[in-house]
Image 1 (cartoon, one colour):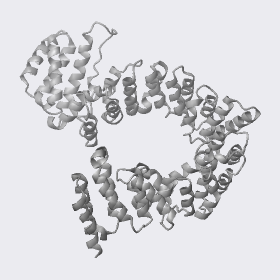
Image 2 (cartoon, one colour):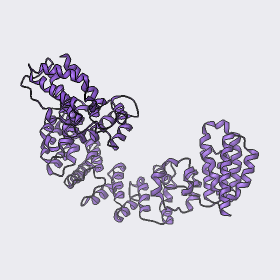
Image 3 (spheres, helix red, strand yellow):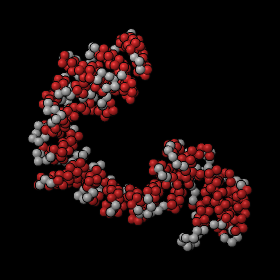
Image 4 (tube, one colour):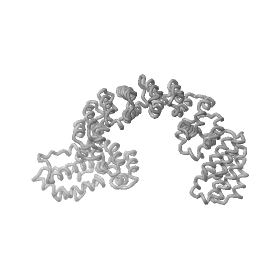
Length: 596
């Protein structure tokens, strides 16, 4: 390498970081200009470099653009100093290379982003996202670091820069992306292709086609995703469904599922009969294409007929897969087919369940009535949980629900039918909303269950049935009053086994008593508090849970505040639990004052 070119390269690098305006009057650049001018007498390119350097040194105006043009030309000249490359005449492209960026931002403003782009470690993505949101990255000194970030070892950073930041820099960065792009490369080169496509759109079609035909599998996948937006490229994508590489076939089918053409639908439906059907059906299930959905329904009917002709393991598996693809779709006569499958005694319970679940999800009255009656049909009692759900959707009264399903519950969990209905009740029967935060078993599932269980009421005849089966969690939840002596003794016997605020059973009994407005709940809780405090050190790993459960006292009448305070001061020893109870007492007193 010619030494003066290396010096100029180092200077342009320095100015790219420090700011192009610092070039004005720079003595080192003037010295370099003089050397290049003399060299220009023998080679025009050095004269061009000298002129561009002189312009940069002599005037601050347009310094950013001039620095970039000089850097581009210098990069080209340095490239020719290598020992390999295609021979030919050099053409000056510097006038065409102008990045839409300047150096008006202070170094302090860009330094955090520059550090995030060029370093390693955690926390960098947040800095980059903040810079993007503030639009504080359109600076010449950041162009090269942003381009290099496509190769970042942290994929989330590489993807964010590639998909959100680089495309906004415009066509001026295309030469730099192409220079680093390797059609046989890995994921980083696929990202470069994605950036190029976001910038060039249809102007780059020839480039994307080359990537599809010549690229590595990562580059092919990116090219398929890009070309999916162009209907004329559909035939080329369809060819990739025959690729040896599974990932490429998956990308091709994903692209075709977005199409509404008959050709694409035919290729996908053909794929459902191939070795790819295990995963392809999940892609097809997301399709909105009427043509594809009609074809899928036709395949389901054919698979069902094949199954009826002679049940085999493969025919059962194939029918089950295709049924999954119909989920959430509506086709003419689909409901009739699903009903036929669901009640066909020759169809195993698992397949019947799939069909019945799909009918249940449609939620129209005709299908709900069918599913409600399904558990009474031959070989279909194991679907009683779906029938139960249908009854709830139909708005059956709590008395009707009990009368219809009590005999299934009596089978107990030892029986498969009893097991499924009791598991359904486990998910449906809740404590009242005010007490749910303390439910030790379902505390983390309320967001999912709250909406579908809201407004449900339960016949109190369930209480004695659950009690006779010793379904204690269901007893606790369904209880709304304590009127029978047997019910009270059942609860007292349970709390006697685990009389602590660290116990799931103990807390569940208290929740049930509060929910049932039992008049002596405070006395039971007071006894539990003293015992919990006495043995707190033996359950130190549960202290945080105990502290949370002690807040249950706030669900009692505020009139208990005075008596509770005396118990806390006289009986409690554990500092953390005592402090918590004093907070509870304070809250109860405040509530009492408001009520007065």
